[in-house]
Image (cartoon, rainbow, N blue to C red; front, top):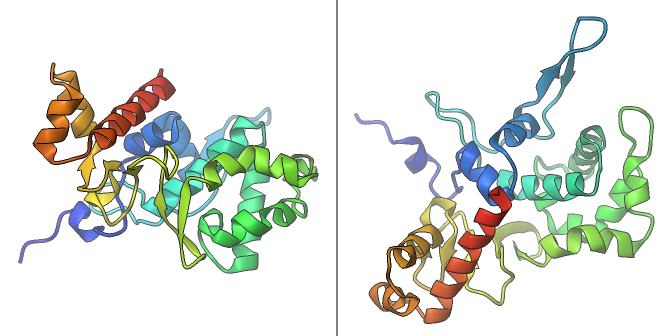
Length: 237
């Protein structure tokens, strides 16, 4: 009996290699690996220290193939947002731990409750040094909105509970990341077609109008795919 490939086993979950996740989140593969797996670092005593993973990945490693799922990707988006604001990894880790305990989940940042009640979560946690690192971030509702609202507006929830779709350009533009579509690859709707394929087709000396006709897509979908891929390129630069 033939075994299914890892991608087939994870169909409907979304599957991203660590480099793919890094590209979508807008950081390095090494950073993604550290957030997901933890890392060791040197200390003056010579024993070395250890920074634990922020959360447990949705997917297990299968036959040497390491990947993450859609919910992991969403968690990483929020970790990146906090890091951009200077929040320390110990503080983020403690916030994730507290939220996971309160809501009994492995992916607290993926919950709709996080969007509405996250501020009170962060106001109660301390990092490993005893400092209320996220309290400063969450002193006011305005501060919370400033940091997270751009991400929260891009997320679609199922029955107000769990994230089911990410609209990286906002839900007014037809590009989404959905674990049920093309193994979670970014796609242009309504067909759907991976944005990378559309962008590469236009780059091969074809017009957006021609590519739209070939794939049976509205022109605005092809243009949105090109915009999305260009943004990813700028992030990686």
